[in-house]
Every structure is written in structure tokens, then in C-alpha cells.
Image (cartoon, rainbow, N blue to C red; front, side, top):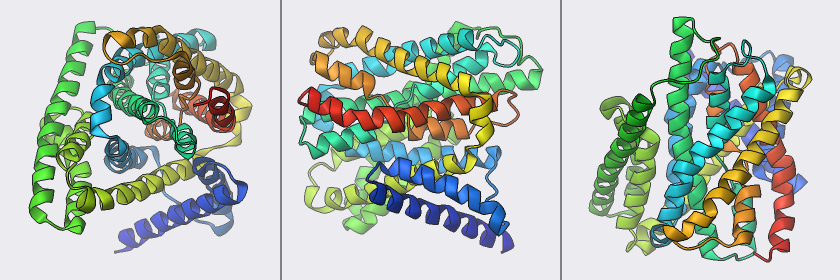
Length: 413
């Protein structure tokens, strides 16, 4: 009973900080994520004064992120996309989320590895982890501004869909690299600085994770739609949808041993497509439900980020942060402008203004923070990677996010 009481108290403390953050965002007229980050910092300052421990540790953060937060965020993002528009842009989205993520992650890894020039303190595997994390994008601020300006639905689908598919692929890549990194620590070979070996094994892992996850997601999406239709009421259908997000992830990861994130992504898309005729019943209620669940999850992630930010990150890792910022911006821009011309071969062409928005608007946000928070503290370079990712996220919030409104107006989007 005491453990349950403690968990409830810790959850309430972070939830209250999230509400304070949302209020701060309204007062300061800024994004919710920045308001929640500020609230998290303030909550961290308050902890010693009230002698309270949130019990946030790397091991339980990993479970919280992968079993609670990521399924909600991925399902919510997939649910918001119109299936018909998604079908039209599926070719370019797959292009960006496969080849694009690989190029972006590898470029970031190379720049960070050679920029840090510290094989013992920052080996190749640490650079790959950084690249995988920063390959995930979060254009929530961009999408919000586009919707306020009644932007083209095609552009909204491209921006949201590209981020969603990128995130799923980046999470799969992160899981692979983290597995190798954790194994290297156990084997005592973490400081070798040698690149990953076994390209055939890596390719096989990706194929099984992606296609296996898609198959599980297809099955769960069909079952979810059938159950929702059978239940009849909107409230009961929402219960089935929320259960589907968590159940699909658990089934894929722990029973079938494939990618839970890919499974959740496909499940949401399939369920939404099957229920598209139920606009006046299920869909009308499902949208707001997933919206507040996604808002709460994002708020909690940035509150936790605020709680874990420390001054030594900036005093000791400022150069690493600058290297990561340059790597993230440059790699994202290069990957978009290399692949965007190829989009016309697999789908609609992407205009130059849209390419510029995709490049600069590829903010790093909630997914990057969630992934880096789940890094095991046993990795000797976890603090460096976390500092670099936090630096990039702060740059995204303070510079890219605030300048996006000007860019949208300038390009008449």
C-alpha cells in the first residue's frame, strides 16, 4: 500500500507540474513544450526545499517511456492523419523514413564522432546512439502554425506523416543500437571505438522488426475495429482503442518479439481506416480523447526533461552541444534535399518551399527527449549523449520553433 501511495504522489507531483507548465505557456504565449520544460526546472528546484524524491531513475524511465509514453504518442499521431491523404503520400513517406532516416542518423553520427574526437570518452557506438535519437523529428509547433493559417491539407499530411514514419524508424534504429551498446558494456568492449559489424544481421533485424511489426499491427488494427463496431457505443469503443495502443505494443514486443512501435503505428492507421464511416460516432469522440492523452504525455516528457537538466550539462558539455546542433541541422537539411527530388518517382512531387519547411521544420522534441531519457546510466557516455540531445531540443524550441512562423509567412504557406 505504501508503494502505491508513493507512486500516486509522484505521479500527481509531475502532473501538477505539467498543468503549471501549460499555464506558463499560455501566460508567456509560447509553445506548451517550452512552458512544461520551464515548469520541470522549477519543480526540480523545489524538490530539495520540500525534501521530496520523485524516484525518477534511468531504469524505471526506460519502462515508462517504452510502455506508456511512446505507444500513446505514436498512436495519437497516426490517428490524426487522414487515411486517404496518407495513401497518396505513402511512397515519399516511406522514402524519407527508410533511406532518409539512415542518411540523417549516419551523418549525425559521423559529425559528432569526429567532432568530439574522443574515442575513449565518446566511442563510435555513442555517436550512433546520438544519430538514431536525433533522427526523430517533432514538427508539432510547425503543424500548429500551419493549421492556424489554414494551410494546404496536402502539406499538413506530408509534414505530419513524414515525422510519424521517421519517428517509428528512428525508434527501431535506436533499439538496435542500444542493444549493441548494452551488450558491449556487458562484454567490456565499450571503448573500442569500432563500428558495428554484421551488416547482414542488422538488415535481417530490421526486416523482421519492420515487417513483423506491420503484420502484428494489421492484425490488431482489424481486431480493434471489429471490437469497436461490435461494442456499439462511443465510450466503449474508446476504451478498446486505448487498450489497443498498449496491448499492441506489448503483444509485438514481448510475445512476437518484433517492433512494438511499428505495430502501434500500423494498428492506428488500420483501425482509423476501418472506422472511417463512423464519423458521427467513434471518430468524433476519439479525436479529442487522443488529443488530450498526447498533450499529457508530451507535457510529462518535458517536465521530466526539466527535472533532469543540470548546470554541469552546459558548463561541461557546451562544445558537445554545439557540435550536435550543427550535426542535427546539417544532416536533416542534406537528407531532405537529397531525397526530395526522388519523391516524384514514388508519389507527388515536393515543391522547393515545402522542402525548405521540411528541412528547417524538422524540430527535435518529445520523441528525442523520451529516447534519451531511457538511456541506461551504465553506459559511460550517457551523460554526454543526454547533454547533446537536450542542447539540440533547446535549440529547436528556442530558435527553430520561434522562427517557423516567419518562415511560413515568408513562403506564403
